[in-house]
Length: 278
Ligand SMILES: NC(=O)c1ccc[n+]([C@@H]2O[C@H](COP(=O)([O-])OP(=O)(O)OC[C@H]3O[C@@H](n4cnc5c(N)ncnc54)[C@H](OP(=O)(O)O)[C@@H]3O)[C@@H](O)[C@H]2O)c1
Image (cartoon, rainbow, N blue to C red; front, side, top):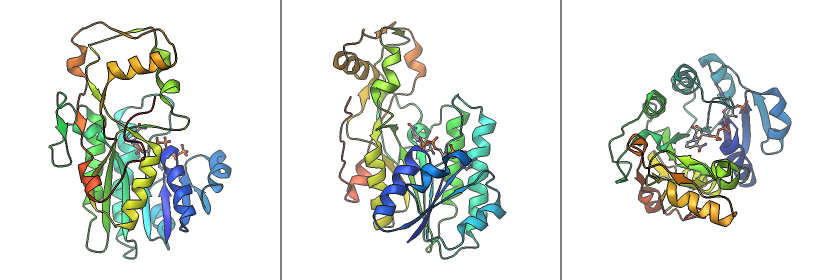
């Protein structure tokens, strides 16, 4: 199959490499000219895509069978909601318009975020739970899902992956979190966090392709872990000074939820990393 990976960053590159190894012909996009060489190692073709207007998208969708959409604003700082809207919603709206011209495209897979669930005070949530985005950023991610799902038809399967927080090579816990060792954090640390290893996202993407999955799927490991426990294990493992919690009300404002992966498992998915490996 010919597949285009729109937004070939951390997740997209790993999916590109895996799908190419499976024998598919991969086109990868980046907004950065300097990344073309890197992407040519994981994809058959790499292109610069900066403007996701309908016309440009129509050009790059020629001869594709599958679209994997995995965007995140390119910035090394928190971006405002306008930038989020521009990246996610603007692209989704134009992609849906562009897809109308390509009835041969059989599947669209989009990497959304479990952030759309908001806070459930530690209760389990599934794809059937109501979403409760905690801020405008999460609202935009949910609106993007809805725009993309509106393109579903008997000929086009739209599959939404709600990813938990991602870890994996180059995004290890030590690298991500050890800067907080020895600090005092707000709250109790009793809020649940949910994680998925990059390998499982890649492997779930293979399943989605093979089984032509459509609809919403959580992509998350089996064992949610409290922030307190996560830091405890991290600090013990790397002999770092402990993280303290100030017991303040901050925890009430943080999102605590346990995200179920039963729907994906019911499709036959077997996790490679069922628990976080710190
Ligand atoms: N990171 C997490 O823990 C996490 C958790 C839940 C969900 N997610 C979701 O997972 C997805 C992938 O995350 P990631 O970590 O792989 O992101 P990433 O490494 O930052 O990659 C994002 C890709 O999108 C491209 N891009 C940015 N703005 C664009 C635009 N306007 N038009 C077209 N392409 C654009 C980037 O281009 P360049 O190559 O030029 O940078 C890059 O290739 C995202 O949708 C994110 O919301 C992530």
